[in-house]
Image 1: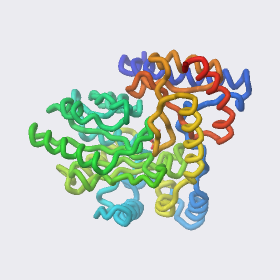
Image 2: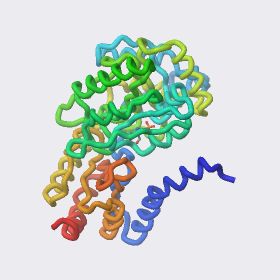
Image 3: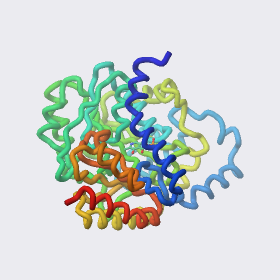
Length: 395
Ligand SMILES: Cc1ncc(COP(=O)(O)O)c(C=O)c1O
């Protein structure tokens, strides 16, 4: 029999699954090219050529037992050192391999951090709109996710609410910038203000509150926007990074986490993370792709392809009267739905073969998420469908 806890998750994820099934049905009837699927965050841009070259080079030159064997749970030491040096060069930090754990993407990084810091009943705070899986990750460790309501005009942090929601049970504050689903990037000023609130609350409650920065979209930014490196602003900081989007490798499950040396119980924490990687069932990050990492640290996908989609889709939607905070990072946009009921609106969009995800799942009713990691043809060909949708709902 399936556990009650799992049944809750299965029922909770049925909306996304229904959307996926719906997409398949529509594609069978109308042809895949006539269905405009904006539902999934699967990168559409090819990985950089360096990835393929690195794989061939490694297979030809390195020991098979090294490539395919179990490494240390925290990852190969030389790979972790290469990551640390890359970060130091880029951000002026002072990391060594000891600050880094290689992980199966950002999802695993977040899960092992949660495993290490959460007791049942503890709280993680995040900001709406947020990546839907956060609730499940917190539930994995019998913790709760507390959501700071969104500032709907900007999707910036609502500081008054944030401060009020921190309690003695708050163990972590989880931020995601560039953000899925809004595409917003927090400025240095915002990060400093978040850090200041957290310092104050740590002192007030006498607790450790960790700042956890989920950064799979760090490299996907437009308009010369800078993404501040959060470790510099707050001692108890973890960064969860991933190559899923920066190198278009989501199926390879490769990323890493960075923990600040200045954090509480640093050495014990690193050992705990090493053990967590094993006991959560990941054991270690994919070893071939760990070996690929040092060759590709300075590479990223051609983000101009996403940028063109971003500009064309944003211009079209706003021209049609949709209200939307302009995204400057990641590959999502999060416009308001013209009617309050976002689920009903996304259902109505299916009539025009448009697959959009209701904002409710991201903690923001009255919105919809569009993943513009699709072909440019899909963007352009979907315009008549958006015109019909707007004609029906926007007066
Ligand atoms: C905000 C956010 N965090 C984490 C993840 C998980 O990414 P990964 O493939 O690195 O585990 C995703 C994936 O879409 C995401 O959007």
